[in-house]
Image 1 (cartoon, rainbow, N blue to C red):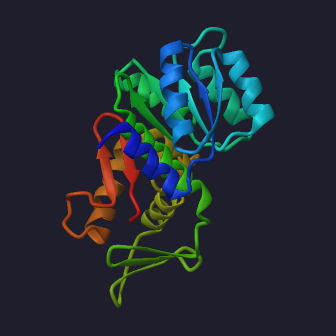
Image 2 (cartoon, helix red, strand yellow; image 1 turned 60 degrees about the horizontal axis):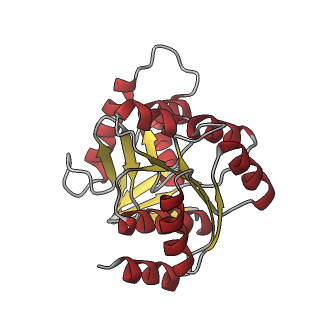
Length: 240
């Protein structure tokens, strides 16, 4: 699929939105601006971290594309500051660093997703569309995926016509996944969101709980149709 046809699909989906690109490379700025404007998005560009932070606070974009290696304030610090302001704007990090530690750090600081350079513009457009769609669709009390129906109010899971018994921790984990569907979650993020301040809990506890949850919701466990494993990074829950 060409870049133009991918961008056109984004525009037709109605999820173009207002996108802030914080990137110091002029060539990359131009490529990203051209493609997202072609998709129907309203775009602003900032070339350094300080200008980017001002644009975030003043413009309130629908989504931020954030490079890590920035002058002034780097992408990690900028992501941290944005979240400290209480803003939940989706952030997709763009980085030439492919080390898992850098990816995990960015996600733990509050980024929603990441793309490593060099990347396919088609993949980036798809990631942006997914983030914007998730932000705009209100989460209902009942969520359907596959054969499963999860009542978030009653904390009740059914598979077909049969109720599936989950432990309290599995229920909290499933609800956390549903609330963050499509977002890349590190094990530490899941620990903080599900286990909270409980003591003597390790990241292995996350893996064990996810393993048992998969046996109850996945069509073909241990394969993950809904709960995807991202090697050395964490997990992502995909809703249809």
